[in-house]
Length: 368
Image (cartoon, rainbow, N blue to C red):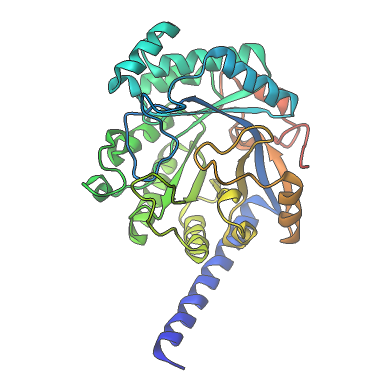
């Protein structure tokens, strides 16, 4: 056997052991179920003051699709999602475009608001008033005062940490010219949510120029904040997918094996109470993630596309249930807030409990 083959064999054995340990830890904490949330994705604005090297979601003023949804458009999406059995309205949007673009400021002025966050609050309030959906807000970096305001109209919030690597903000790197991708600011947002007890989702994006050690450092940073405040309900490990017409269009994507190893390490680093999620639409062999310790597939929509990766369709729920079952696990529907966090999701706890069964999962299970 050649030396290179021997090294590969030992690496494969090490990864297999890591995955087995991660899966055992998941089973002990989460049992034999894998969850998902039935939701609609509401891209409130596609404008953003950041220019990430991998992002195809953002549309700058003058580009087709640039702007803000109106409240009527938001409600149209939410009501159709409600008709299809969705229980969560995921607000995804660019970060603070009004600080960079006069066009954003003018649009907000016409809508009766000074800031994008003010408009998010109104949009969430309207969804709560006119549908049974519970908002989850992904609005990027936030101050503690903004989090407190959004907490009144959302069941949970989220923001991907992505990485703690400051290198990625240098010229030529993925986060150059992205003021809101400062690791310090993003960690401050997660910590502020913790101080207010907000059920929070965060995670890492792999393959954007970080080292494996920096991935580990990012996971440790998230876990440390959770140990202080107990508020991180889920961590996402998401793999970079190259997009045409972006600075990283020709960059290599993480391999399937890289995802399996990273997921296993994440499960072993994170507190067992933190849900570990990986999106099933970004890898054709997503069922392999289960043996690396995940317990959640994230948001799946019967109505709206993945606006971050529009070229990657969601798997049909029946197919997701079948492939999850083939690995020995049962697919279950959860709410935007995990069972252990329902009581902490004030002031919307009463609305959430109307959706929840005795086990804290969705009262009406839809898995097909």
